[in-house]
Length: 496
Ligand SMILES: [Cu+2]
Image 1 (tube, rainbow, N blue to C red):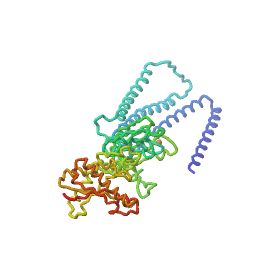
Image 2 (cartoon, protein in one colour; image 1 turned 30 degrees about the vertical axis):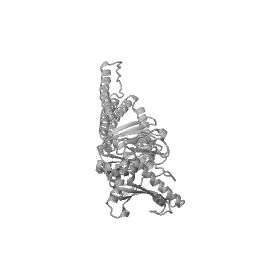
Image 3 (cartoon, rainbow, N blue to C red; image 1 turned 90 degrees about the vertical axis):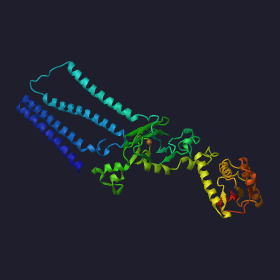
Image 4 (cartoon, rainbow, N blue to C red; image 1 turned 180 degrees about the horizontal axis):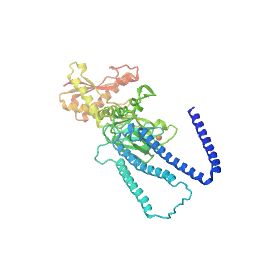
């Protein structure tokens, strides 16, 4: 309806203009061409001045009215340390180009009025003027130099990499069609090596599992950052060009396949603090259309977007960004499971299957010690047994697997600490297969354990090896899990 009315008004104005033109033509014929021409020129000149005033007032008006929609103003203030220097660069550039804009607009319309066509007036021809040349070359050159130097300065500040000894949280963002793989360094603070040749179904980033720095790296579904902490993001892409864009932090960097880029920045406001700032503005005090129970400022979240049109699913590259206090960050990071330990460890893809990492050795040692202490302090003879949970053998055979040795080393160490301790090493099997064979196998296995301990310096007289076959199940033999529990090696303390 409004559109129709506007269209009608435009048509009417056009008709009026045409009619006035016709009337002027007629009047000119009656009054004389010359005089009429001068009057028209005068009127046109005055219109120019009126238009100029209205136009400039309008420009100033909308700048003030829409101020809060501009970068660096109102709710669009930056949330990172370098962001404000970028924003002030924009403001300084707008200020100087604004001055030029006003001067040229005023001169354009003033000249149109001042030098309007007049009977008898003659143009002055000026082929060259050095003074003018100098003025309009030197002034823009000085202003440009000032802007360019300021811009370079801001660029150097924004793009500066970290110094070698600087404390920084380094994370990695890998863009792919369509999403981001966000990799955190884990407790060691170091991101592990990767190689695209190692990418497969179980290894989306091609991490090299032989590199210990990869052991604790974890992949996150959202970008969580501690406030006030310098962050360095390694940015890469797996398929096509993407762009790592954090609008509120003024971070924007291409993610290029085969050419790693980076961005260093420091978030200065937590999500909660930013929401509190937005709360001051009426445009954020309206219900969120997606969640009418809440106001827009309450549902606000920082976001990571891809700022490169990278394909059909481009929009789905949005990721949530949360900036939290350092304590909250530490709590969150502690709950994130290592990708390697939870998806790759001890599978066929694990090249470290046959060895334990220091952290695992220590964890198993602590577990063993706890079981031993319990058994040592128990008074009931039946409770004086400890399961050797991590001792295992080749299937159907009595050869110790390489990983069993770590557990047996713990036992050997305990034996040397408690000189009076004597133990019975007991082998157990499940009920599958022939009874006599099971008995023989369990005996062989107990003996293998004994032989290993003797090789570690434990006196053979302190060790009794005995096989119980399938006679002492601790679980059902009807399920695979139950049978696995029944196939076990344990030791019983005979004397201490
Ligand atoms: Cu993309």
